[in-house]
Length: 147
Image (cartoon, rainbow, N blue to C red; front, side, top):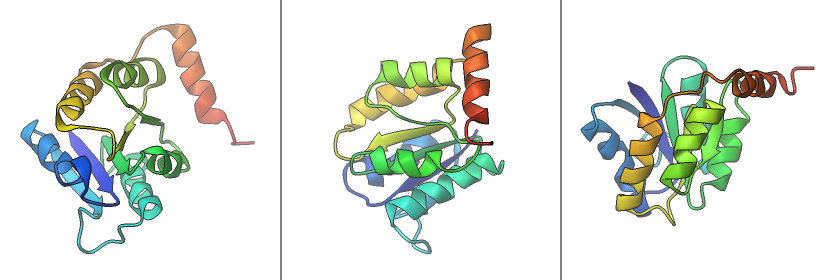
């Protein structure tokens, strides 16, 4: 799977996230502080990763900033992106299953390497629900703001 990753700094898991994804067999595109040719601003880095997902250059994305909040907000501004700020494995699993989230947002401050491992395990193991009500909600969210 191709994963687009961004971080606005290399603190915390910032320096480790891309390598961890590669160890899991994913092809990784990097943005922000992970790419010497780009701005490390959280808004621009998160947008770049989210656009990769929305425009089909990546299957999923991971966006990181100090709290994860700004990265999540920026990614969610890109049409077609459903970014979820996840602080534990259960939330990551639910975001994939019930929300069909395609971008994982993480806090560089609060996500340790062992927690990152748990979150990624849950994120990649979860299948999107086939429940009609959940799918209708996912479809409704996609239409919000279209007029």
